[in-house]
Image (tube, rainbow, N blue to C red; front, side, top):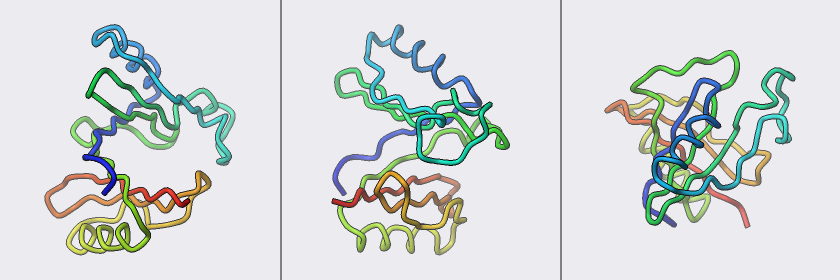
Length: 136
């Protein structure tokens, strides 16, 4: 694993507003905002301004955030996951297999348009994991 687990917050169309709020509260910095409209990912025009991925940093506090797809809603209690940036295809496969064995696969392990292998799994304890391996 490259880093510690990073909290990933999911919002229902108001991620930008939430990030601005956290920026003010914590006097931090919003980094790397990408909207669905900017991504090489097919979405309807009404989703163009929704946040696909953003990062927030204040000292050692680091969060990632996004909005849901238009046809999904946020359910309080399941809108926080833990993101792991992994170091190899073997490592991501190992964690994907182990976490999904008695859990629920929310997104199959797959190659992505951002140059990574990615999966989303809810383990048998209800914890949601975002697994990502960025290919070199």
